[in-house]
Amino acid sequence: MDSDVDGPVKGKDMQKLTVIENGAVAVKDGKVIAAGKEEELKDIEAVEKIDCEGKLVTPGLVEPHTHLVFGGSREHEMALKQQGASYLEILEQGGGILSTVRATRETSYEDLVEKAKFHLERMMSYGVTTMEAKSGYGLDVDTEMKQLKVVQQLQKESKMDIVSTFLGAHAIPEERKGEPEKFLDEMAAMFPEIKEKGLAEFVDIFCETGVFSVEQSRDFLKKAKEAGFRVKIHADEIDPLGGAELAADLGAISGDHLVGASDEGIRRMAEEGVIADLLPGTSFYLGKKSHARARDMIKAGGAVALSTDFNPGSSVTENLQMIMSLAALNLKMTPEEIWHAVTVNSAHAIGRGETAGKIAPGRKADLVIWDAPNYLYIPYHYGVNHVNTVYKAGEKLYERSGIRG
Ligand SMILES: [Zn+2]
Image (cartoon, rainbow, N blue to C red; front, side):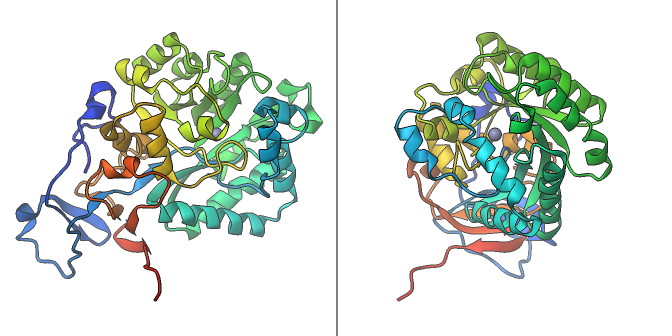
């Protein structure tokens, strides 16, 4: 299953999904060499054949927005939220993200690697074969570097393809309260070393009320571009600040969240080819009634991607399949749009459109076999793992095992 369109799949085209009944995929040396109807591939002599009768086969899922590396967890905040405290109120009390910052600073490099690996492997078991991972829980030079190096080690050790993003501008740390510009200067001063050591491909910022303003974000991301990075923005998640317009102005690869994005911002992002990466798990987990306007974004001719936003505060799940269900239920996306949003478009949102998110000759054999009769089934049957088997570059990474006895 894939799309014939090159580049991200936009607007009405998101409805046109290529689905092959009785299909087959031929794989050699970790790469797809042919894909099509079974009879079209009958002349290819197979060393091993895997029977997928009654099952669905798709490209490996691509997860374009995660906060993979962090210390600790924040289960105690659930009760505070139930008593009505908002995300920004918890943040003001030094809780929320700042408690994760403290835990991440205190956790050793080795322990962060182990913890991140645990979450990453769970993502794999849910069908993800390519993902993005952000820093942003250090908020000081040493800990941000530590997080980026954890990602770099995982890039070397894990079978998962991981794309690294520097999110030093995720929040204002306690020791820089009231001095956002000074803090942003410190984070921007890290750009040359991050670039030189190949520690990140993208730079991101949390542009939000009480965090960084549109002007501060513009200034910071311009410096990032000058230092040779492509940029992403946590834009208009809570308040409609103009983050979507900023993403369009800067030619960001993606604008993420966008729950409060304006009509103008939506239109301009579509026009400039900025991918709208939507994270409905966050709205769900924070108990919000409003959702990103995926329908308007698609109507405007934009490309939409989907992600878990996996993080210990506002979206605690590694399950991208659950996000597919939320996209159907809360964003009113069709199954066809949803599949584009977790494969080809999410790959483009992290600069991997040429290598991930499609089943096509010459590409890595990143494939998922699903215990599902068709592609409609995954968003429909929610909250569980439908994966039967995950292949990365032709190698079996995960297989569902049955109940013993
Ligand atoms: Zn995020």
